Structures are given as C-alpha cells and as structure tokens.
Length: 207
Image 1 (spheres, rainbow, N blue to C red):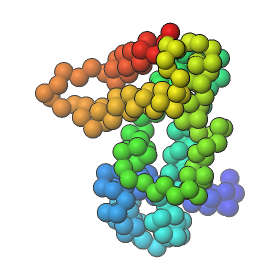
Image 2: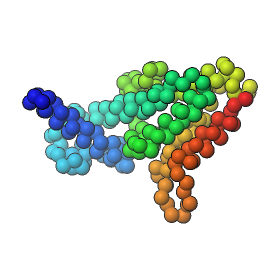
Image 3: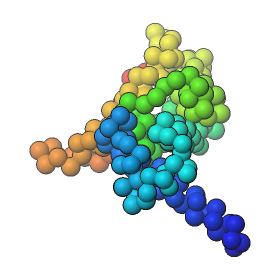
Image 4: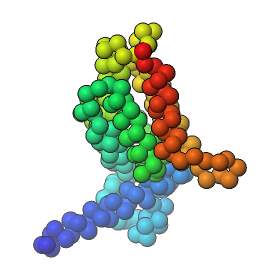
C-alpha cells in the first residue's frame, strides 16, 4: 500500500469515527444539545481535527443524514426485485426491521429525533428518486397491489396504505429500541413481533 493510500485510509477512518460518535450523540441528546467540541471529546480528538473534515455542525448532520438514508434505502431496495407485490411487501417489512435492529443509532437519528428537512437536503438524501427512496418503493408496491386487485376494493389510496404500513413497522422497531429489556414485560423477540405485525397488516388489507 502506498503512502498516499495509507493516508487516505487513515483519513476515512477518522471521518467514520466522527460520524459514528456524532450519530450516537445526536440520537441520544438532540441536534441542538451537541457541539463539535462534545463530539471531539467523545473520540478523544481535538476540535480542530473535526473541522478538517466538516466545516460546521450543519455540514456534519447533513452528511450523516445522506449516508444513513442511503444505507437505509439500499436495505429496502435490496428486496425490490420480488415480482409479487404482497410478497415484496413482506420482504420490505422484514428488511426495514432488520435495519432497525442492526443499526439502532442510525434508526434513532433518522426516525426518532428532530432533523433538518430543507428541500435541498432532502434531495441530497435521495428523497423522491425511485432508485434511492425506500418510501417510493413501498408506495409503488401498494400501487401495484391495487392495480392487480390484490387488496380489499375499498382500499384505493396507496399513500394511506404505505404510511399505515410504515407506522406499524416503526412502532415495532421503536418500542424494542427504547423499552426492550424492561423487566415488567415478558418480552418476545423483535423477529416474533415483527412477523406477527407484518402478517397481520397484510391479511388486513388483502382481498
């Protein structure tokens, strides 16, 4: 490995450490409460090092949202080739839950904390692009199911269906991220709860 390659790898490692620490702090404490100095302390670097990678906190959160949204979308789009809409819906649900379980800090930052949502930032994150936006794929799946007469005849609004399905999946992930382990509940696994939720929602909408 050349010296330049080694330096680039080291630079990327530091950048990833910054992103990981910032993600955890933003998710736990909120955007306004976290400073660049606080992030530097968390990874035992000087604030100057942080500013070599990100000019300010806004640039850092924008990059976090872009990277995490891409990771999330790739997880959902990985099952997008399934031709049968209801089976694809089932796989999207499982992929969503697998992402939340594998990346709880990503999930908290994306869906359980206040984020910047300016139009230009949303465009950077791929929102509205069928190739990168997981919601568009979920929406298209319900549109196909409606067009193929797979759903109850009164269910004709794909946005309502997509958002209700998303809400169900979010509820399962969020309750396991925030409450799982509390001793006063006999918890079942995330996989068991998720499978029941997915199957119940599909049975509830299918013709």
